[in-house]
Image (tube, rainbow, N blue to C red):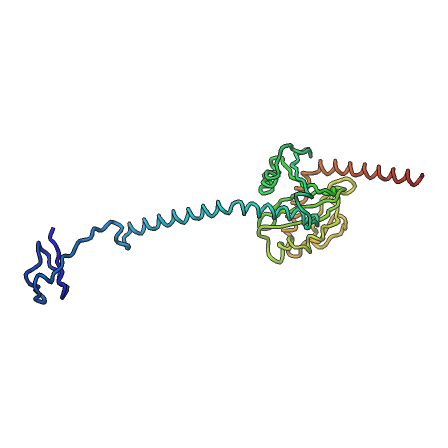
Length: 285
């Protein structure tokens, strides 16, 4: 392969075994020529080539994917704790007990279809069930949260106009009267169905009853306005489909807990009767 020599004065390139005796362009002697060393070029030396673009893109995809995976792993525990705290806070909010310590005030259980506690279920597993509540209900597992003051909180799940709706219903110790409710949604219409997540709408449920003379009737959002003050609240104007979704959610979800609710209600009645008898005895004395 012929060598290349470059004139230091005019830049002329000469190919051959040696520099020319004299530059044919500017006339300088051979001493003014410098041998040009050839550089070996790889297949990626041309940044405009298809090979370079494909390899570069592949490497960048791998690097970015690796960084995202590492970020996801590093944030997993933090994300889980944030979701867990959000659920705990919603449970306390339904009880109007946001100032309480969840771990001290609430005990969690999972019930079977007969209302009996399933033994050996840890808190982490219970909150995992909340993340997939429809599947949990389908499998006959029903999480419930019991407050120290005798009230209970029942998670509910359903479907609104545009997607899932969910929440927590707190019942007084009579297992009949709603002590509070927290509702949320994935994508209901702002200003319409999305109003279910506002304190104003949720406050209308407080004091309503889910039983009528021992029969489960749930609580309904009524289009045109409530006519039964014990079991109905006003539906959201312009949010009929979402209101219907909430009605179905409450009825279907609470129905899963009837064995527990009825059993606890009977115990409450017996305890109240005993207290009344004791008070009568004291009055007679």
